[in-house]
Length: 326
Ligand code: GLU
Image (cartoon, rainbow, N blue to C red; front, side, top):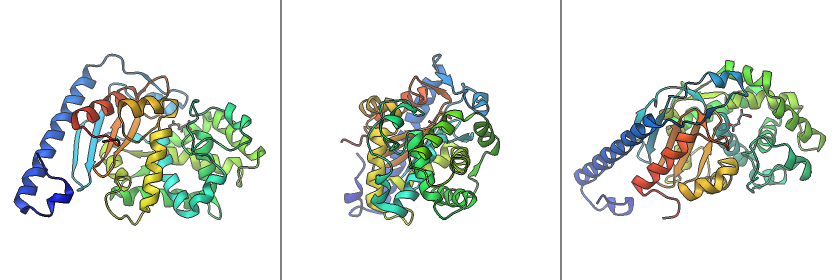
C-alpha cells in the first residue's frame, strides 16, 4: 500500500518514487477501463442544441484526465480534443469574485441548491431577484456583473483567461469566438434572466454588457488535460497565489451542493466528489487533497449534465475509493 503524504517525508526517495509509479499505473488502468466502458455505451444522452455551435459536437467523443496534487497527469480517450467549458467557467469567475469581494458577494446571490433547471426564470421572480446560487445562470450573471465593476468586458475576460492559464500553467487556453457568437444569437433565456435581474435591482451594468462577457466566458475552450490542470487550484493541498484556503473550501462546498444543477444530490450520492458541469459535456471534479479530474462527453442527461461523464465519475470514484466523505 502506498504511503500518505504525512508519512512520505519519513521514507527514502526511491520508495516514494516506486509508490508514485504504482499509483500512476493503477490510475491509467482505471481510466483505460472507463474509456472502454464509455466506448461500448449506446445510450450517450443528447448533445445540447439550443446553442447551434454546440450541436456540432460528436456524441462519440469521450475523454478523461486526472491531474494529481504532484502535478502528474494521467489521461485516456479523447483527452486532447478541445470543447467549450460553458458553466464550468462559473467556478473560475466565482473564485475571482470571492477573492475580490469576500462575503459581500452573498448579499446578491445565495448558496442554496435551486432544485430547478440551470436556466430557470421562475425562481428569480419568486425570490425578488436574488439567485439561489452562483452556478445557476442567473447567479452566474450576477457574479459576472460583480467582477465587471469598474472594468471593461475585455479586461474581465483577460483576467479570467489569465487565471485559467496560470492555474493550468498553459498559455494556449483561449476563447472560441464562434461559440460565443452562436450563443449570443440564441441566448434569449439568458437575456430574459439578465433583464429580470436588472429590473429587480441586482445588476449594476447593462444586461448587454454582462451577457456579452458571460457568453465569452462560457466559450473558453480547453481539452481534458488542460481542464484537469486548471482545476488543481481547488485541490487545496498547498498554498496558492490564486486563491485562499478558505475560498477553496467554500467553492468545493458549493460545487458539491449546486454544481450539477438539479442533479446535484444524485451526483453527490453516486460520486461523492464536488464537481461542476457544463452543457458542452464537460465535468470538472475535485478529489480534495488528491486530484483534479476532467471528463468530457457531449451527450447530456435530463438535468443537462454529461451522461457518460457522470457515469465515468462514478466509476472513477468507486475504483479509486476517492470520496470527499472518507
Ligand atoms: N452557456 C450556457 C448557458 O448559459 C451555460 C450553461 C451550462 O453550461 O450549464 O446556457
